[in-house]
Length: 82
Image (cartoon, rainbow, N blue to C red; front, side, top):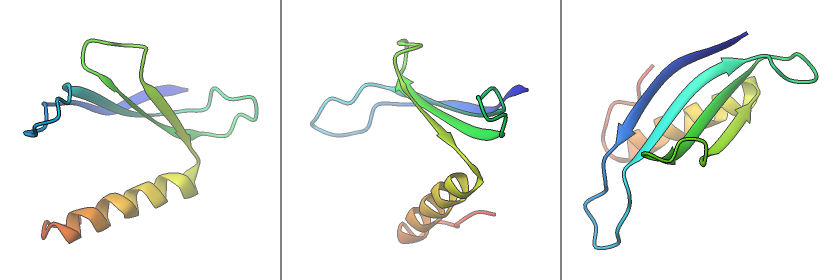
């Protein structure tokens, strides 16, 4: 099983340091030697497909990342999400 869940393009950040536009994608897969399903997260520069970094997260790792993102949103005064 391999399925994409969501993806987006993140425009350049408004900063003096040049930061290229980036893309992220999230999906699930069980194409691993141990057949356990994982969440994968890919981040790469826009237009440079196949050159990014891919995280392969088990349930605990995915929940920890979700909590970190929710905490960061809370620090910004934003809704933490579901």
